[in-house]
Figure (cartoon, rainbow, N blue to C red):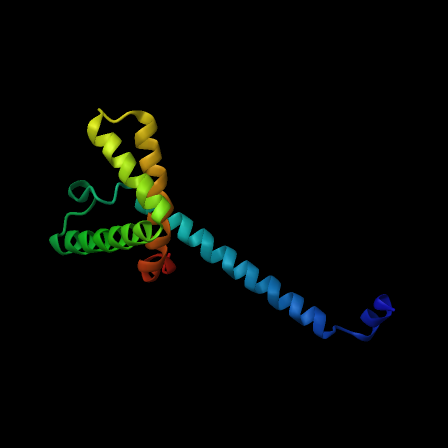
Length: 130
């Protein structure tokens, strides 16, 4: 019976499936655009303003962007009590020692968990133009 229904023409199910596939494709494109933006933002060492940007007004904008992203990321981190405790313990270990590679990797991973989503939310206008 189901095979005979296709002989009549496309049905509502076909339109819904096409719509969902189109939405999935658009979401994938948006995700890829953000990933390329974030990789560029991260790999250029965005905070190293002296060698990347020369105009003073651009430096001020970048400082505000970084402050916004870090503020949002730290706010989200501290809303998660378990991650906040872990972060403070790792920072204390880092402060007390010479900064072992394991401690640095753990801090980096924990920060990345919160910085990336904050960057996606706060800098939406910038990466959507890529």
